[in-house]
Image (cartoon, one colour):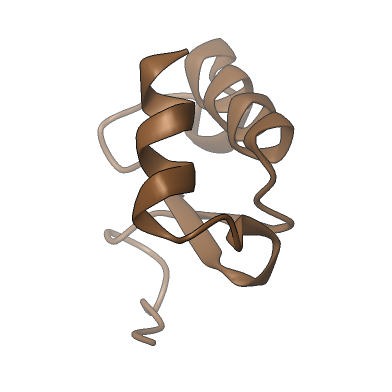
Length: 64
């Protein structure tokens, strides 16, 4: 997977310490949308351990 290799290289292989969020605002099903669920699974499989969903219409975004 090209994305996996690119992210791994960009973060020098330390993905488990990085935080990611999937923005679900445009989806009617929000975090239950099958594509959002798949994206979350893919990010976990890449090595990210701190993932979340954010809906900028309703959630207060947290900036790191």
